[in-house]
Amino acid sequence: MCGIVGYIGTKEAYPILIKGLKRLEYRGYDSAGVALIGENQHLNVYKAKGKVSELEDFALQKDTSGNIGIAHTRWATHGEPCSANAHPHYSSSESLALIHNGIIENYSVLKDKLQSKGFAFKSTTDTEVLVQLIEYIKQTNNLDLLTAVQLALKEVIGAYAIAVLEKDNPDTIIAARKSSPLVVGVGNDEMFLASDATPIVEYTDQVVYLKDEEIAVLKKGEPLKIVDLHNVEITPEVKTVVLSLGQLEKGGYPHFMLKEIFEQPDCIFDCMRGRINVESDNITLSAVIDHKDKLLNAKRFIIVACGTSWHAALIGKQLIENFCRIPVEVEYASEFRYRNPVIDSNDVVIAISQSGETADTLAAIELAKSKGAFIYGICNSVGSSIPRVTDTGSYIHVGPEIGVASTKAFTGQVTVLAMLALTLAKEKQTIDKNEYLSIVKELSSIPEKMKDVLELNGEIAELSKIFTYAHNFIYLGRGFLFPVALEGALKLKEISYIHAEGYPAAEMKHGPIALIDAEMPVVVIATHNALYEKVLSNIQEIKARKGKVIAIVNKGDNVISKIADYCIELPTTIECLDPLITTIPLQLLAYHIAACKGLDVDQPRNLAKSVTVE
Ligand code: M6R
Image (spheres, helix red, strand yellow):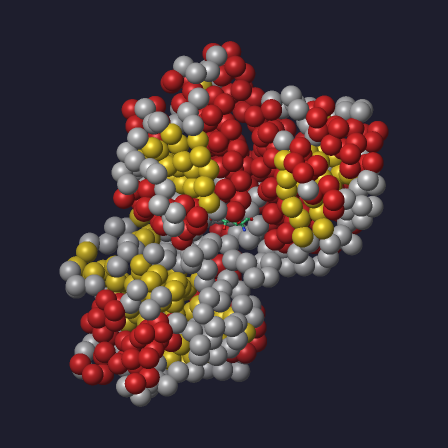
């Protein structure tokens, strides 16, 4: 939610900031703005409603000179998306400009206090309160900017990643974080600031991930300085970030989402690389080796996650319970954090998150930690907040996911969960050796089978054209494929704005069947597994009510193909790995329907890639 960029050095800041904002646009795109200290020593702020390109148009004839600046792309929390609410926000005297990602929860109390002191506000945001508070503290006590920021942040309740520029201090950016991500890039005679490393990697691979309540002082000609709120100096921990520019480009695809769908065979291969030994059909997960006792003696696993990651968790539950015979509960992180759950040191909490920054998942982890549970993270974004607060974990290694709709992260999460379940089951001896070997072997063949599924892209694109009319969709699946139905429905909803619901196929007769008529497309995932016959009956029930069935079946299925309206034929795999194969046609279906409707697939309305506010 919201992207932050900053630059200080010898180059022109504006083009670097704009390019950085474009890389971070996936975090929010309802307005954008930039603040620069120009050659004329003015603190210039330009902002526009809409995407970064609108800001570029707006700033065309303006003075964008200067080698120090901060910029922001917004996902609105407090205050509607409009130019006045866009960041940066000036302080009253216009001597300070501030950008912010997060929420100032006590903004209204602070605003009342500042208004009573004569401060006027131009926006309805919580952020403007913070910049005014800094100015108030600075002026009343005649303090330098750093001290004023430290004092102001002590008064703030909430989450923040901020950067502040001061007109009379044109060589310094002050930045700070609490519960919202912030990375400093350290180059030669220049420093960068960003919500993640993607705007920075083009210039330097040396980065410092700020920790909570750390304040970074980026000063021209001086090394990076980090202090805490009490001004105690902290030695910056410089890390080398491994990210190639190619991973951040569309690479010839019309959208990141399509590129990311097509990357899945390679991603899943990378996810298993070094973990699955193809010669011995053995899995090695370092997190399990390092924390064997804790994991094997767990009385229960609780998986917390949101959105697509929560769907992966539902598959993880079935994998772990099936193979390890350990009870697993799956919780929405947002509910778990507020419901006083029964949890103790015998529990292992698995937190799943692509971004590693989801506020609800982070809060769920904190709660579980406070009750003594052991925390295992499954994340994609290296160096993000969740891997830093967990006891151990496994990265999914699928590379940056930029399209707002999650695709390759889902299959990466399911792959890691499968490897985790199999590894624990082998250690606990709850799985038969031959079964273990055959599943591991099959897992290694998944990337090749995914390539076969992607061959169906053209066919699915054609099929999608038929359904652009639809206002509703139903997705049905059973067992391991019920979460796939949920995921298919979520993909369609978020990018095509078509209402879609996923159900366990057998639940249909308990209500949703009332919705079926000749206008209702029903996607049924009906690959050949133990419940095939049952799902076949569900298809009959839909056809008897004239619903339009799009069946996802295995190659050579000549039963369902005779009754379904449309069939997508997939390679066969074993039941527990079927989500890795069956999800792909649903991703493609959602993608092509949205693309056919001419919608903004990568940046759908109202959404943001990483939800760093609750
Ligand atoms: O980064 P996370 O995995 O924690 O994100 C969780 C959800 O916000 C995310 O999966 C969201 O539902 C996606 N837009 C789904 O495509």
